[in-house]
Length: 133
Figure 1 (cartoon, rainbow, N blue to C red):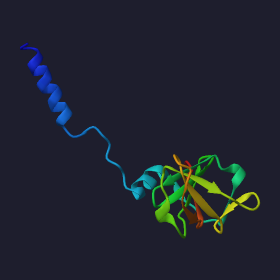
Figure 2: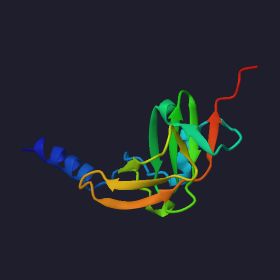
Figure 3: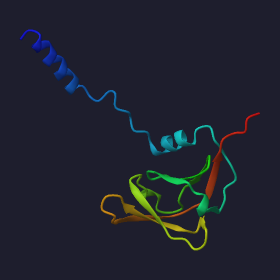
Figure 4: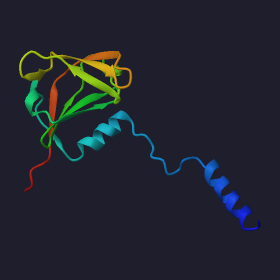
């Protein structure tokens, strides 16, 4: 019994302690900065090729990042950015083979698949790793 009491007290102390080991959630701008890392911004473009996009990532209320090889194309929407949620599904309807700054992207809730908003895209800014000297 004597051995059990200290064990129970230690377990209770751990249960009451706030999740100190839990990671603090980064702000959206900090998430974007961390994702970009040491990449350098290039000249903004109006369009990117749909066929070359490997993946996309939503940064809450901030941007959509499209990965093309090792280049990250950051799009800060001209309208509707406040609707961006990293748990939404992007539904993009385009004409042709490019995603352009004039296109709109619908947002769908991942769980219910219900419409949750839309964004109108802005320019695509490429972020590339610096060349080794």
